[in-house]
Image: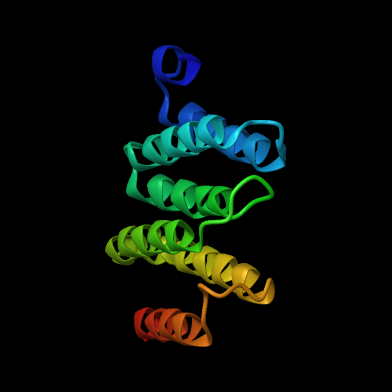
Length: 136
């Protein structure tokens, strides 16, 4: 409610989402239904940020909420990462946004290092190819 009603500034919303994601990722005492509702709302707020690069950053960060101590849904993680990748690809017309895909690559590598079954080396190679394409 505070996020929706009291925060008008885009930067303040971005910071609030960062705090919410960080907090939710450490909490374990919610039941599955409540956690799902909180994560779904957080993901929806990430997608509603006005600036595309902020959306991409927030969605990338929030993807880890679907693979935490409270919930492990690899399909949702990949959905979020693919959504962030689409947004990042749109933002690549400005060189300053190259950090978005590098951040995504870091998140891909994070999940791959955890030896999860939903992230493959092919996913990482495809993202690396996209980064090389944009650099060229």
